[in-house]
Length: 448
Image (cartoon, rainbow, N blue to C red):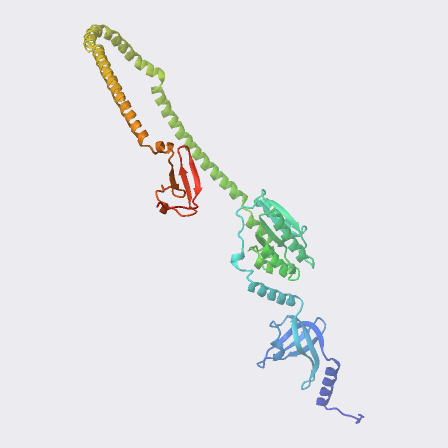
């Protein structure tokens, strides 16, 4: 028989159980995979959170759902901050999710999208930042694991396509916590040394976690700041990283990157063959042209040879010599007669008689001129003596020699002929026959 001490109703039991659960589990964090996701018109979501051994029903209301930065879906692995509760109408144990974050690869994917948007806002993907690749690189730098498949693929392709290209390997870790720092250091070292003309950042395929070093912000900034062009060759064709967006060129695989930077050896050999044939044709044409010019010049030289010219002019020289020998014999008598006539005319026109006549005339003129000059000098001497006598008579110096003097103003040298022209204290120069006296006027007396 049942004990009637306390009989619970179903609703009471569910309510009591809910209160116990909510009072004991205030808040907890739980991780699992979403399944059976439903989205009713209310905007809330209901789903099952499971792992490989158990599952629990969950609900997340619209207000909290708006705060998460992604859209949950079936198969998403998430972390929940939730309250333990019980849905009383059905008696179902459930979790009320207050916050949700992507877990595992989903969290990485969310972080990837955030960084992708951030770098896009900073303009790191813009085409104007992309550097052009060299037409033909002499040396290429490869930043990758020294023991990975990527470096072997690159070396194999380069050795097959263009063995002359030098390769400098910068060994780094391509996975793990230190990988991002080693990649950044390798980029900085390559730009500092500038031994290469282009860099390949490569690794083999893997999961998002395996490739995460190439989704780090410091790696993206180092690629963007690189002065050397960078080709990203990370994973397989379906793999995509932040480094692919920032790099100057993305190659689907490491082998494809090697093909991009290396020309096809056979194609270059064919080009060399065509250039050789073209050069030979040009040289042959030039040689034919020069040969024709040489033949022409040889023909002209033969015609202009000094021996041929000497033969041509030898006969003319003989003719000229014969005429030259005949010419004096024919013209000598005629020239002798003409010379005699010219000598006679020259004697008749001799200037010697005229010179004697002119010399006599000049002597007579010279005598008359000397007489005229002597007479003029005698007359001038006489006039000078008369003038000197008159001048001596009238000269004030003669007057001064007889005891007279001339008084002059000292400042302007004017002759003083009246006492009214001077004042007491004026300086006066008194000229005598043999000098000048300088005096100062102290008094004056007017004649009565």
